[in-house]
Length: 496
Image (cartoon, rainbow, N blue to C red; front, side, top):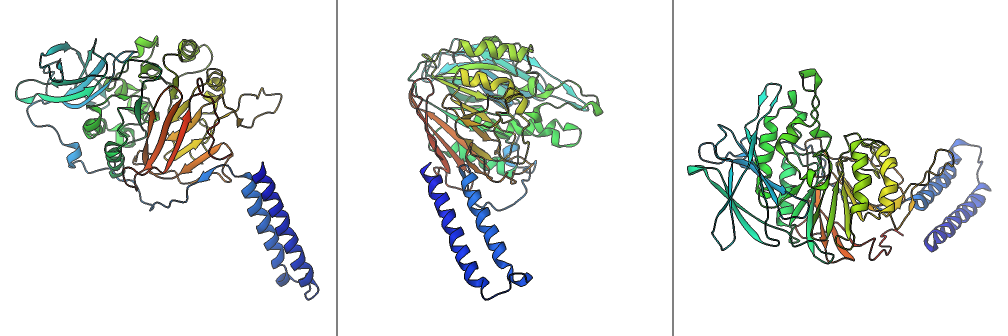
């Protein structure tokens, strides 16, 4: 309020100064002449600048990134290389396999035949090997036939333990490892990486490298949708699903990636006879949806350390009486904040977005679910879709009822922070057209590629940081101490 008063007084002083200059100058000039109307332009300019200052929200970054088109890496790039050995497993990746974090789903592809469907695994330093058997599936998409896609769930794992695992057979065995999370509890520290809209360009490679080399080591990735961008190629070239998974294997074979479906996972193409949405995605990437009572792999929840993660589908039906709506209305009351104090939601399409790309595409979902998010005090919501970065203040827009006309977002300490992180580096490039002035709900925005980390410390505090690709690995372009809405609902606004 003090800042606004100062700006108003400053605005008045500018007007007074200009009035004085005009008054003195008018004695010596004929103000009816066009050449004498420079002062009108000057007054208008001062008014515009000052009104913009009064209306602006937070910070629009002044970082200038060289404008370049994102280009897919060449298919002969080493990041796409096929592992040696006949029918060697490739595209290896893991995700959480149950609700509590004691199971892992291991997935991989063999191209020349089913091969072995067994995962051998053992605790680091133990060497007593255990086995789990999975299942294999394939699919066809237009003129493409997939390799043999394996999914195997390893259950009854010990918390906070390093496991090694092997897939394949004969001379084509490949070995990896992962860490299980700590046991679920309110003060368990844990660090998540955050990525979205990754694709397989040179910028995508920079993003993934920056995440891997970030000294704040992420232990699991929360991925907010749009993986391969295969649908950007003729006939939704599904071979691009294969190259993308070989590229990302270097991370997702060693730590779980928690999947959210984006619009580039829909793959709905009736013009070539493909009318089943999400066919490639659901065949290749499994989620533990049944363990949270969901009827679809596209929306589900998991617990991990001190966090309860809810994944929603922006491109599945979510209106009243739909399965997704029924599930979220039942899921939120089940969250026990005394066990998992951090309540985090992932979705693809953002609700609060001040870029002129995909503007208000998430509005109908916001109208449906935002009152629930406020009621149950969701801490943070992460989205992608817009190929840039933005962080909001805690705001809500839940008072509107068609008649009252109250339709402006307001500060709300029971509401989440909304973060758009669709800046992974995909072939469609950056969103660089922002709405002006910057809305009050927008705390920070920047047109750059990058990634983020969320470092949960305990039940009250977490440290969030966003890193742009152009900086050193440890440099934080935007950061914030986040206070838990349930145990420590203090205002952490950065633009008030």
